[in-house]
Length: 307
Figure 1 (cartoon, rainbow, N blue to C red):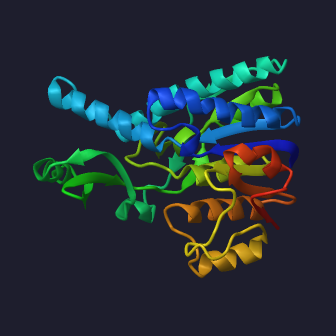
Figure 2: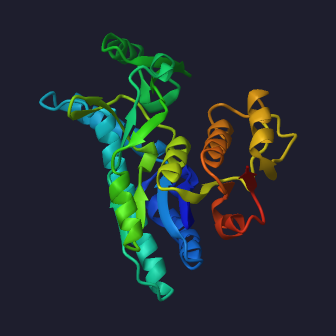
């Protein structure tokens, strides 16, 4: 285990939903990351892309609708685009913050592909809503293509699968950059979901939950810590009755099995933390607010999962 190696997972609150909001919010994320750099951690950052990938998918779909010479962009391509432009804003904000503190450290973004299992049951039970609101006619067209839609208010939205990550193809490059002293942004949005077809990688119509990919990445690079930064100081049970502070893996599993966490929000964070901690020795997962990153890594606040 690398005692000073950490994976930081940034939630959507670190970015906002528009270009100006993102450029403003990444400065706060950069401050939190710089605090960890000053503690001499080797850092890999992964991040959410929920609003961004939906915006890209909507824009590309509308473009294809206005000009039939073009085709709709597949979700894997939209994911790659989101990794690029979020990484661009984030790496520049971190670089500026580090230089303002007198620290020179190269920040690199890696376009990251993550293997998923084509037989993952998530493909039969999609849960992630994406794109704009559609009319009944547009929804029917999507279903004819084999896509899933769900009624939302007066319209319809497309929903896609969220399979579990199996492998991360660029992990050797990520490790090499870490060993060279660089700060790495990787597996944004949970990574680009792909399936192996011989020697080729084919993009899957899916979005991977970024917390699960963060845990997978932290395990593969043998990190000591997984730090999931969100909008809450610590996790609470779904009914809001119990705040989770320090907790063992065994107790966390009991709460998960008893159904105390929302399956679309808090459950992936707790489940990912448990998966990471239980996959190796001496590991710790922390879930807390973005602004509390330094206090969280010191285990002074947040949800702290230990063996």
